[in-house]
Image (cartoon, rainbow, N blue to C red; front, side, top):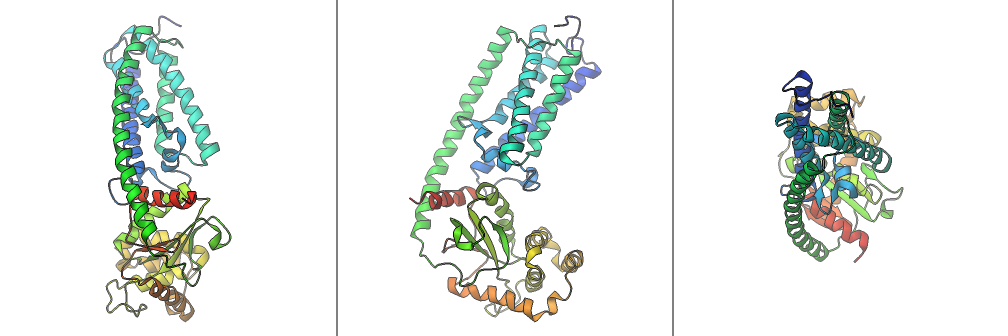
Length: 382
């Protein structure tokens, strides 16, 4: 250790100010990840957690959240990051030699842990959590600043370590109690949901298989243990909620789940079961989405992402972007949409979204955790 070097004992220097801002960044990211952990695993609102951290199937926080290393005994590991950030901030604002030595050692062990989590995410999960990555970067900066400009050591001070470990244990106890309470509530609710699902009449699969797939884990539709058919309308707000849920379900059950889309626009222009044009762009949106089955997943996402702009020429823009010409005048495409609509008769369709899970009808949608409870029941076969 170089005794002459210090990052925090000389007051608010430029380097110490950077260390302070970096600590604030660690705290902010850790708070977000902790909140996200509870929103994903124990949602209280329809549709689950915020999509701020979920950019794509590769860059998302959910895969890490659902993994076994997301928590220790129910305590989200981001909480430990929060304590580390607070400790770094305290070291900068209330400096002492003992605190800086302990922070220096902790920063190294923390960064090694970050490297392990980064490798695990890439290798085992096949995805990367954007906010976790930001935390890794902040941790690397903290370790570098303390190594380059601070009291560089691998050995923390015993008394300081005991003090912060005690605070960590106390905080962990309350976090554990919080998680346990949420688990108990979720378990009771999910048990009720599974019971309700089991009691639903089995209506069977649609008479035809839709060519418009959102996800296929198996080559043949019936080979997947979880089979979801979504009857949906591109102008229906709750259908958009379901569309945004699908990637979250897929991330957790990608190897066991097949999902197909059935058009059911609430628009008399193409749906004879509807007495008016409740959604006067829904049929046009359906026909553009049906124009090319290979491009369907991407077009499906784009239309829903621009749901509030369909009256402003968005459909024409999407058609042009994907080189889809003549879709609205193509009788073959219209017949495919109508064929999907007619499948709704078997399920006595009354509203959208309607979701068929292994032949049983769920009207509307439910939080992710309740879907997961049903899926786990289907997979275990109990």
